[in-house]
Image (tube, rainbow, N blue to C red; front, top):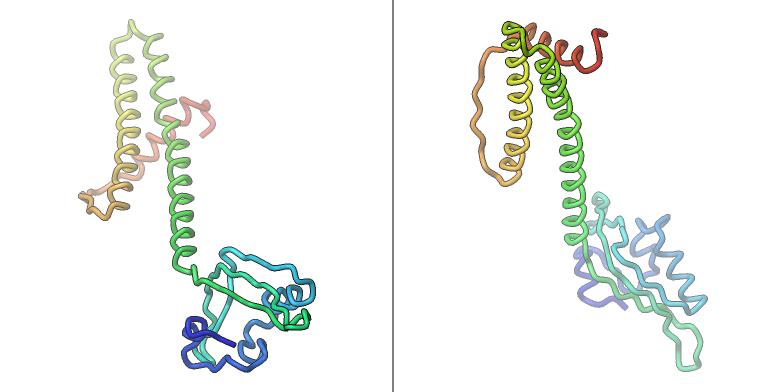
Amino acid sequence: KVNKTYQAIFPNRLLEGKPLLEALPELRGQIFPKLLQEVLQTGVSFVGRDVLAQLRPVPDGELVDLYFDFTYARIMDLQRKPWGVFAHAVDVTEKVKARKELEEEREVRERFVAALSHDLRTPMTSAKITAQLLNRNAQTPEKVGSLSLRIISAMDRADRMIRDLLDANRIKAGEGIPITINDCRLDELLERVVVDLCEIHGPRF
């Protein structure tokens, strides 16, 4: 027997009166035939949560991933002999997909924050080391000016990273962000990076 709600999942396929794998041959190799057989033989009911089933709602159509909460329970006849299995299923596909999207979004956000936290250490460390050098060269005006500019540059980079994080949150919220396009001198950019790395790790670059 197949009720209308279950039959509605397969609007163009006749299920009632057919063996399971004749009605739904795509279930061959999936867990459901084995579970049904075990419940029929042992009498131990089975309860599944968020279980994936690959089904063809349309005959000869592509397999579709659907998720179900379901219960299998053995039914006995009047002589107390196994007669069949009662199957009750609730389609929870939308709930499962929404949860997976939230989990993926959280994973991306955590990776982004971890990468940003790692990258922020470079300008912060550079500024700290430069400040220490500044303290040692307090009596040399030209050195003080040069070191001060390097500290300002490092803190500006940290500030841009933090603003990038805020922009990412605005994008997530569906807001636009202003973009200014300018020419970039790659040689100057690379020179600043090498100077910072040499200050932190020594003249290895």
